[in-house]
Length: 148
Image (cartoon, rainbow, N blue to C red; front, top):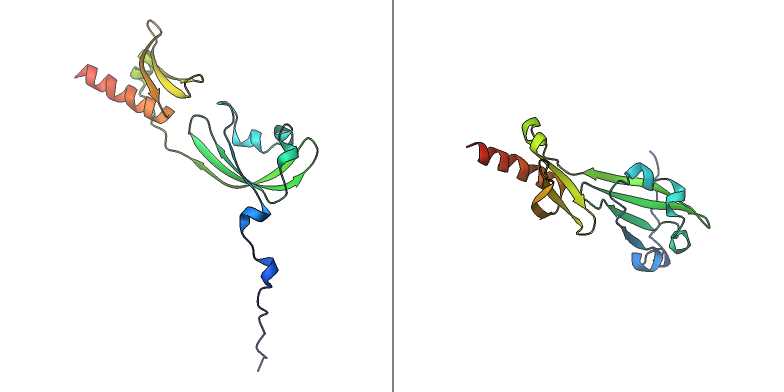
């Protein structure tokens, strides 16, 4: 019969509030920056001096199309190596081909939102939409309503 292994209790000094041992950063990259891009060490050159190993980075796409969580594994003067812990792509509403001919959803960087543009005259027909999916849904519903 095998002897039972004794489990040593956790040493108190090894357990502390996470706020004392690491940072959690929130990053909102520019509209065309991908998860693959933020995983490149040189992407972090301007903020590397603020990062520490085991810091976490929450990355929210500016257009709310995806979210990623990274863990800092190594830091240099002008670089940060981070590992992807998770990535979530949010649902997208596609626009039918007929609606695509008349309208387009475009990012309005100044307003930090999407707009629906009528292609015929480049007029903004709907503004202040939080995601591309919502903008495409508006286009689909509007096109359906106009056809009825």
